[in-house]
Length: 64
Image 1: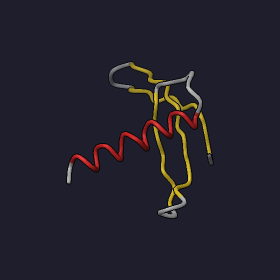
Image 2 (image 1 turned 120 degrees about the vertical axis):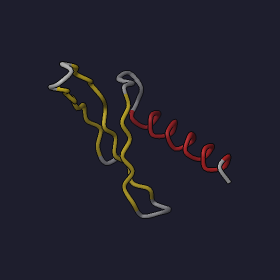
Image 3 (image 1 turned 180 degrees about the vertical axis):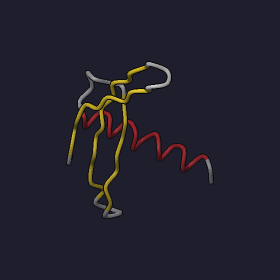
Image 4 (image 1 turned 60 degrees about the horizontal axis):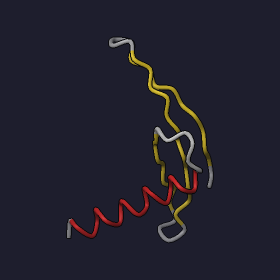
């Protein structure tokens, strides 16, 4: 895990604020950073990364 931070995105035109988590991990296999955005504030960062990683594998598998 490289980073786990809370960010706030604001829409000036719509007056909406969205609180998110920005999680950055290092993918050793591809030698690259992966950035995930989530609204799950209570999950561990490692859990969120695993969910996204598993979901990506499923979507990649089904699109072949």
